[in-house]
Structures are given as structure tokens and as C-alpha cells.
Amino acid sequence: MKTWIAFWNILKKDVRNYYLKPPNISWGIIFPVSWTLMQLLRSPEHVEIIELLPGLMAMSVLFGTTSMLAVTITFEKKGRSFDRLLLAPISLNMMVLAKLSGAVIFGIVNAFVPAVFAAFFIDLSKINWAAVLAAIFLIAATSALIGLFIAVSAKEVFEAQTFSNFFRFPMLFLCGLFIPISQLPAPLRLISFCLPLTYGTDMLKGAIIGPPAFNILLDILALLIFVLLLFHLCHRNIERKWIL
Image (tube, rainbow, N blue to C red):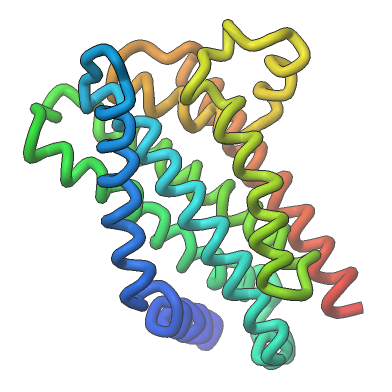
């Protein structure tokens, strides 16, 4: 019981101190609106809003979770408040899960902001919402773990932001959002198969606008493998760099 109380208090503290700040809330609203307007204005052909929705949701999760977790943990490390968490009577796994949970929840909320706006203009009744929720959760989990992996290595906030972009932009352009994977050169196609966002985006596209490129069970399995692998890497790096 005490473990879950500690879990809840860490999660509540992160949500109150970081995720509910006005700049973060406004970013979650402005980003999808500005991106949609840019796509609609720059395209010479007519673009359906529903075709933009998978990309908007995936980007909202990716940028929201990686940025927030990488920056907040780096900030806490610099302020020495994270050291107190490491000394708390709670297992390392539970502490990591508590930190990840806030970022995952923030990413999921961000992901559905574009869907709320889209609902005012188009019919979303044909979307497979169960598959969308599963995809968003798995994208948020992998993105949060990437943010944690970055935070382990970064010493300053600007380093965390720089490292985040190093991971985010290759994933963004190689996951099939802008260029279909089948049209990528063979070496880049191989790299895209090694990116978690590729499988999350495929799930979203399949649930929103049509059949996925891969089998949905393959997408889920691949994302679960990425979650376990990234969690193991983060756990090992925390023990090696922050504890030992």
C-alpha cells in the first residue's frame, strides 16, 4: 500500500508542477491547429482533414512525451530533487513507472486534442477507437522511455532538447508519415523498420483511414518489444550512472 501511495504522490507532483502549466496546455492546442493549417494551405491539391489526423496524433504524442520527460528529469537532476527520489523507500522500477506515467498521460491527452478539433468538421464515427487508443498508448510509452533514456545521459536542459531532436526527427521522417515506407531507399527502409513510431503510425493509419501496411498484431508485438527493451536499457543506465 505504501508503494502505491508513493507512486501516486510522485505522479501527482509531476502533473501539478510540470504538465498542467499553461505553456504546456497551450502548446497542445496550438501545435495541431498550426500544423493542420500549414498542410491545408501549402498543398496544391485538396487534402482531407482525416488524412492528416494520424500524423497529427502521432506527432503530438512524440513531441509531448519526449520533451516533457527529458526536460523535467534533467531539471530535477540539476536541482538535486531527483536524488531524493532515488533515496526514497520505493523500488527503482516503481519510481521509474511513476515518472513515466505522467508523461504517458500527457501524451495521450495531447494526442486526442487534434481528434477533438477534427470532430467539429468531419465525421469520425467510422474510426476504430479501440485500435487508436491502443496505438496512442504504445506510442506514448515508447516515446516516454526514449525521453527517459535521453534524460539519463543529459546533464543540462539544452542537452536534453538537442538529444531529443536527434531521435525525434529521423523517426518523424522515416516512419511513413510523410513518405510511404515502400518509396524509401532500401537502406532507409531497413532503418524505418527499427523505429517504434513506424509501427505506431501504421496502427493509427489502419484505424483511421484504411488498412495498415503491416498486420496489426505485428505492430502491437513490435511496440511491446520496444517498450520492454527501452525499459531495460533505461533501468540499466539509471543504476549505472545515477546509483552506482
